[in-house]
Image (cartoon, rainbow, N blue to C red; front, side, top):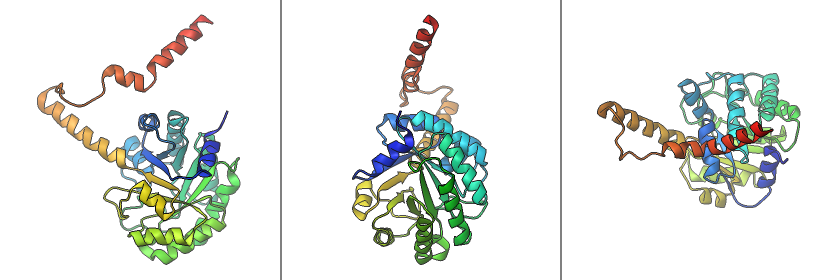
Length: 290
C-alpha cells in the first residue's frame, strides 16, 4: 500500500503547483478530498477554532494536535495531509516527539515554525521568534526523528514581520541547511517580496500561504506557480466561509423558529452519502455474513 507520505513525495517531483485547501476537521478534510484536492492542509488556526473554539495563540496541546492529525489524515485519504505543527511545542526533543506523533498518525508532512511560545497566527500582530540557532536545532531534530525521508519536514519562519525580509531569508537558508525539505517564509508583504523568496531559493520546494484579508497579496495558484512556488495553501478559506454560513443559519433558525425550505443545504441523505454511510452499512452486512 502506498503511504500518504510517498504519495506527497511523488507529487512534488512532478511539474505543476500543488494546491492544498485548508481543512479544520475530519468532515472538511473529506469534503476537500471529494472535491478533487490532491493534498489537504491541516490549519492550526482552524484546529484551535473548531476543536476548542479559541484563537490560534498556542492553546492546543501537542497531543490534541496529534489526535486532530490522525482524524484528518484518515478522512482525507487518499489525499496526503500536510499538518501544522506550530513551533514544535517546546525544544528540539519536543519537536522530535511531535514529528514521530504526526508521522505515525498518518500525516505526510509536518510544518514547524520559529515563533516563541505561546505562538500566534502568522498574520496576527506582535509575533516573536526564537533565536535562529534554536529553531534550526528543532528542524534537525525533526529530520532525525522521522522514520522515512518521504515524510517531509517543512520549515516556516515568521521573522519577516518583526525583523524584515533579510533576516527571514537568512533563517530560511539556515533551516534548509538543517535538513528541511520545504521552506515557508510567512507573510511577505508584496509581490516583489514573493518573487524575492523564489529568486533566493530557485531549486527549493517553496510554499505560499494565501490568507484572505491577510498581510500577503492574495494571488491565484497559477500566479504563484509562475513565480516559482511549488505549493499553494489556502488555510482558512473554508473556515471563514463556513463560519459565516453558521452565523446565517443559526440566526435564521432562531429568528423564524425553523430553517426555511429555501435555505441552501445538502439533504439528510446527501450528507450521509458524503460521509460514507452506504459503504459502511454494506461492509457491516458483509461482516455479519462471515
